[in-house]
Amino acid sequence: MIRTTVYPQPPIFEPRSAPGAGAYRQRGVTLFELVIVMLIIAILTGIGVPTYRYVTTSSRMSAELNALLGDLQYARSEAVRQGQAVTVCIAAQTTSPYSCAATGAENWDQGWLVFSDVGGTKNYDSSVGDQMLRVQTAFSSGDTFADTLGVNAISFNRDGFANLGVAQMTVTLNDKSNDAQYTRCLYISQSGMMTTAMHSTDSYCQ
Image 1: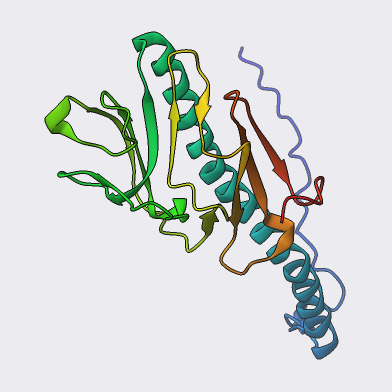
Image 2: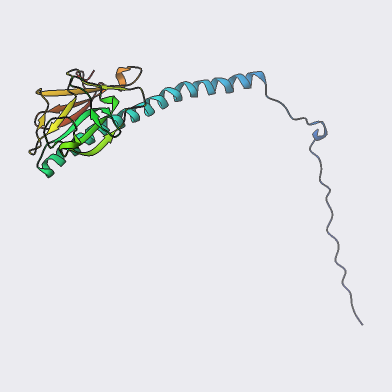
């Protein structure tokens, strides 16, 4: 004889709708909420845009200043290594045939040349054996990078001293809007020492 056990079925619960669910409608954004959101966006933009401009401009200015500083330091080390003069001059032409700007030129933002100066003339001349070492093209940013003494070339001798024609020269970098907060300076002495400064920390840098 086979015995069969029958288990009771669990009760089935029907989902119940929340009270008033049938009358629910999606609510839009009110004018007040829209104005608040726009106000928040305006405040964040007002804070973010000037900060972004400061960061990008400062970064560009630092890169431009360090480009000349790095090439001057390279020229000095090469002069000592090669045992002969190495010159950095403002470029009149940054493609072959290379040439230096005329005496009295002061705008380093138009680019510069670094070359072994066999004849010690401070003017690139491949016919006497001068060798081009580095070339910096003109700035595309619109920033100005100039000295007020018209020193168009800096030559380092085998001992690392700089032949400037003056005791010390300053090359000043200004952004295209001439905003003093971005101004930077490069100081070069006859001993071959080079330092940099910012207008915000050095009142002489302007």
